[in-house]
Image (cartoon, rainbow, N blue to C red):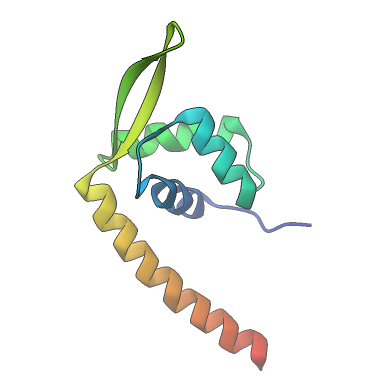
Length: 101
C-alpha cells in the first residue's frame, strides 16, 4: 500500500527534478516514477498546469529526426520550489516528531 499523491507533491517533485537541468518529458517521467507511483497520464497534465501557471517554459529540440519537448524551470518556478522546500522541511520535522512520540 502506498500513500495517495496529490497534485502539490507531484508539482514539488517535478520542480525539484528541473532545478538543475532542463529535460524532456520521458526523462521527467522516469525520474518521478523512481520515487512516486504515478502514471504518465497524471504527469503530463501536471507539466501543462505548471507551464500554464508560469512555473515552467517549454521548447522543442531536434533529436534523432524528431523533436523532443524540453521543460525549463522559470524564475517563478524556482521561487515556488524554494518555498516548497521550506514547507517540506517543516512538514518533515513535524512528522518525525509525531512518529517518535
